[in-house]
Image (cartoon, rainbow over all chains, first blue to last red):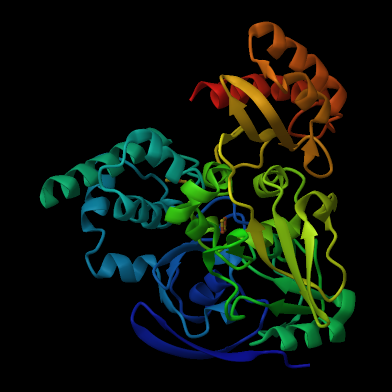
Length: 161
Length: 285
Ligand code: FES
Ligand code: FES
């Protein structure tokens, strides 16, 4: 029985139309159908945050949403968000503070960091750590990551004063 | 892992949703925020024939003040509940509990009603609605029915919802003068399910606890009301002697299970520590 459904959405501003099986997760759709492999897959049950993307401007777990649920939505991945320059300062701060090693966690961390700073650029360390609680990094350690986010936040808060 | 195949439906009205629930019976699963169902599908712990996605049912995501209190739509996203300006005023217990529910990127999808209908024994929100004596509004084809929160949670992942029924909203009665709320929990990492959580909603008068509602999570199959402990603290000033007496009473209220996260003895110890912490904060501020 063919249970597949046609969906249309925009991904990084580009209109996309595809037939998908209902059981296909959004992150697998992005990776396998659209070859946007910047969103990573770790645990597939919502624990690690590697699959983080934005749907209609909200941060979501790409492994905990079905591709069919994104029908009609505006999806943004690390490729799109980095491409517009929106997180250039965060990327730079991550590099300067050595906040990445293997990079498995980095796309998810950057998008999460961007959401933390969007909500409050003057965020303190405790709030950053709470905000990052759903993103695992298994090699860098969190200290450098927190530092990088504070640095980018300080730059933004200074810039808007 | 990847989910087993299923058919996907996205009803546009409650009527359509009832049709689908009837058609599939136990083989149909309601998909709300999906932050518990999707992991279960991915790990093939759940293999339903049909997934019935209610996310686009209209009118179930609102948070509004009504004569009967604060009404929270079942599909209100947890993040929206957390950030709603009326919450701190009209349901401070829920406002305090919300940051403990999962993580930033799960609260944006996870729904208020979904967490209640899921009835995870360690979840925060069930304990809160029991402590607040909220009313659960449940829709079925024949009409809407109201269930008191205290009768809604029946056991592990088990509620009073019958086949064909959908939780549509929750009404939290207005906070009466003198009542205060404190929620806190102990977990190994922020965002994990609680090892022990406590939703306290009490009337404080003259520095003493006049009426107490103490509801624990993570220590039983469903939210546990600590009625012996409530009786000990009611009408008394919380000096160290009363707190010690309350801690002893709590032993009789709780019979926490042991699992990979914590032993029974550790949970008992943590529950006592949390009780002291929460009660002290409750009368102190
Ligand atoms: S792959 Fe989605 S949270 Fe780990
Ligand atoms: S840099 Fe390797 S997991 Fe974070």
